[in-house]
Length: 389
Image (cartoon, rainbow, N blue to C red; front, side, top):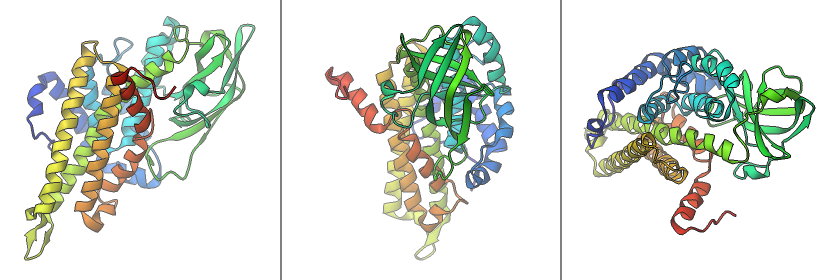
């Protein structure tokens, strides 16, 4: 397969500034040089390429759209383009960066004290320290309001008890942002690795997101100082605000996965010959599938770009992000399915990225807000009636 040169049917690159194109090219080159040579084996072996963490920090990928603390201060469009290129390699890579920056670092940035931010954000930006985000529980995924994890004040300390699961980076995180129910509502706490009562175990047997570290956290009489509480977050608005940041990155990221599937299938159909030694790209049914994919990808690119411009203007709302995430993940899944179909038996081989993307995207469809929950968010926006309450 030829080197990736981008997918730009409707000349959407003309809508990007020189700086935005430079940021994308930097991320694209990193993916080509450092990620593509190892990602297939990482997915096959069920491990994350941890040796790339410091490199991504040096490139400014962690907390890329945050200001100060060593962060790159990128625009939200630039940040989205980085997410796109990372997920073109693998959803697990984008998820690693998204959790580090959009969930853990953003929670500190938006809700932390000056002391908390000064201590953690520069180290997390560089990749020296890793974070995770402990919200989902074994019995409560789409309904975080039902969380059972409790925080009880005991003098100058807080004692945490509960379970969190499906936590990306959980076992390697130096600090976990743990959300728990206290007397005055849901609050966030910084729980450092090695704190007595905190334990983490990795989830094995995954057939999706295999190049991603997924863990469960257990908190048993886990004592943290009062200074560990995020002072500016109370209620579900805090964690949901973080999820909105991460979902925005997903909406961009999955475009990269769709582009990789499409371009792999397009090149394959031109090279693959059947029936009188003609490339299968010459057949009408093949061209119809390619036309469907490139049209869908173009729609996804335009939706992501417009949402990015709105976010940079301070106009992007959570309901807008729900449409972005829901629509673009569906498009990426469709492209993965069509690409697998076009490539026949070769489509299931890990020599090609199609099945890896397809399996990963099945998870992306359901995490950080399922397809159905986002549909209800959109439904409430257009009707004024909340169907999930």
